[in-house]
Image 1: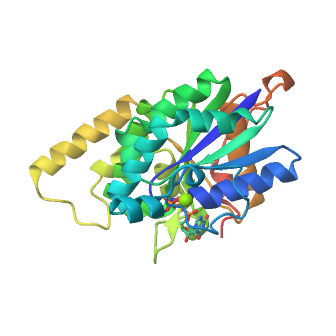
Image 2: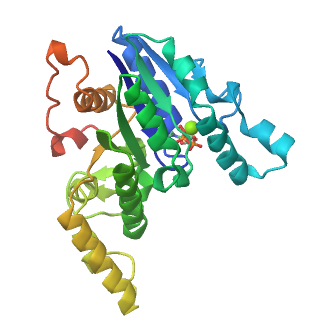
Length: 286
Ligand SMILES: Nc1nc2c(ncn2[C@@H]2O[C@H](COP(=O)(O)OP(=O)(O)OP(=O)(O)O)[C@@H](O)[C@H]2O)c(=O)[nH]1
Ligand SMILES: [Mg+2]
């Protein structure tokens, strides 16, 4: 059986860093794994592990910009169109891996997750090749600093999720940057743990509540929009986040075991149920 994890999420969410830590973790657990770089814009020495497959061998943003005269964004779109037309290249590259676990480091262009046909096509190809695939969507913890920014992140995760019909988990990355108060209210940039829990398991009332540090927007249409979003999230509670703190081995292990479970990794060997998260999991975060 072959497996692939698509590591997705907006620009700078920590996808490449997570992919590397994930890879190290699998290697240390004596599991055979490879990095696949799908980011045509990745810069030369960005990888601690040499990618087993690298889209830059087919097409790189630098060449496209130089030879075709595109800017960075048009250039990226060109790269994905090019890969779509050359899927047989990727299939051939993927053909060489048996019984393996591929960590696919995706680019951070939000268009890729909202409306570009590239990822859905890739997923169809992977499943046709008998590769069991799941996706991890990373959002960085800074998104919790502003509830409006946060809910735009939640909506982008939802939109990516409905676009790709594969098992899926959401990850709140860079949790090492979040400092917590044991209890009590958020103060001096420190957050109460209860408050963090309301973001990891998004409480739509965060949008509706008026006890926030930010002034409530006065435009009634903005209020109506928020109410509609609250309703949407209440009706479709699809999105919750697993906290990822790369400075903690336990945290990484928990995330990896959720990914294994989501993908039914080694189903013949009885996958372990990941233990439920509770507030105690934030206890060692300071
Ligand atoms: N504090 C902290 N910083 C992180 C963590 N993960 C990544 N970073 C930093 O965040 C920045 C972006 O990390 P990347 O791993 O390159 O993010 P990415 O999602 O691959 O970015 P793109 O490929 O450009 O979309 C880098 O400066 C990293 O050092 C983390 O867990 N904690
Ligand atoms: Mg990256």
